[in-house]
Image (cartoon, rainbow, N blue to C red; front, side, top):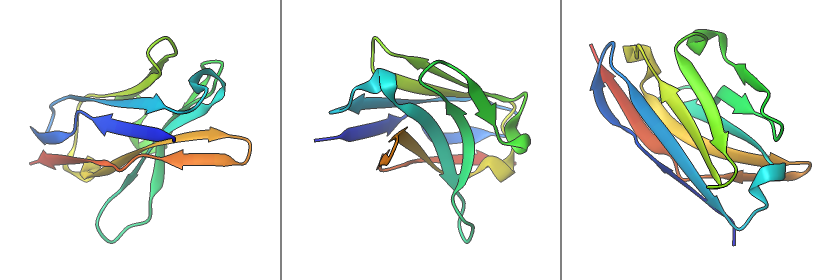
Length: 115
């Protein structure tokens, strides 16, 4: 059974930082591309950051220079370090694992940034 469990969300003031974690089980973590998506109320889910199995990364323009995605294959965990948070970063953040046609999602963790 595949499980992606996010943690680290919460309430933070504008300009603050949070670190999200996503622990994966039931998959061969090292071969999966991993991503963080977010969905704000009334908006579509969007890609925030992704990291390939080899470590290549890409970011949404809105978070470049502020967020950093990383992975620890020994711990089957992907991280999202979020700095200089803004109120517009408020959303539910979801972890995603992808390999070819296989696509898995976590349950999401709420991030709220107050102004």
